[in-house]
Length: 101
Image (tube, rainbow, N blue to C red):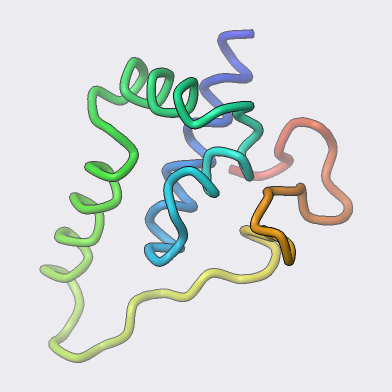
């Protein structure tokens, strides 16, 4: 169970960086966490920061690295698919565990 939680948090870190406009709760659901509370608790336990804190830190680091005015890297459909109702679902062709982190 610990490895699955780690994979989910790693995936959430990627999505938080790549999809800064998505709510943290939507990212948590997309990564397989059943509730916002569990997502925040596990994320903080494994990373030492909240999901929003991670996204803010990543955005600040990205802003410092890229030239002024350059756009942030957009997410692709393979990276996140929240569906019409905003609830996460896995991209087609993936197993229960994410194939690529």
